[in-house]
Length: 184
Image (cartoon, rainbow, N blue to C red; front, side, top):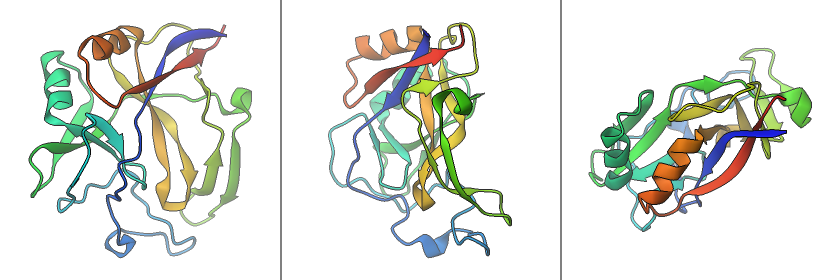
């Protein structure tokens, strides 16, 4: 196996993007939400000193310093959604997808909903195995699969090797990296 990039993670910040899931569109069959990157404009991160963290329902929250870093480096395919009452934090969404190698990783897909096509659980994201044979370019990526259970499902975020080095040099807080492996 060869390293082609890194996963990007952060600690949980003890919040939910949507504490009340009744505000989200849900499948009539399984009852789980249909959009796994929703933004709650009323969200507020009341505590936390990390530049990168995650809500319990799988959403990434970043600070203005993280946003500025991405804008200074002109990264494409990243979205920063505002919160009405918290101008210092943003909902961080990554658009470019990389295919995850579920068979090689032995990822488990549990309880497929025939109505919406989502699984109740997708388990086995770490270590990340990707269907690419070369190093990822400088930038941010997400897996094409979402992992976890129920309404907490979310993609694995990935960065290129150069991106990881730049993030480390920027001294942003709360960033955790692990190798992502490609095909030989």
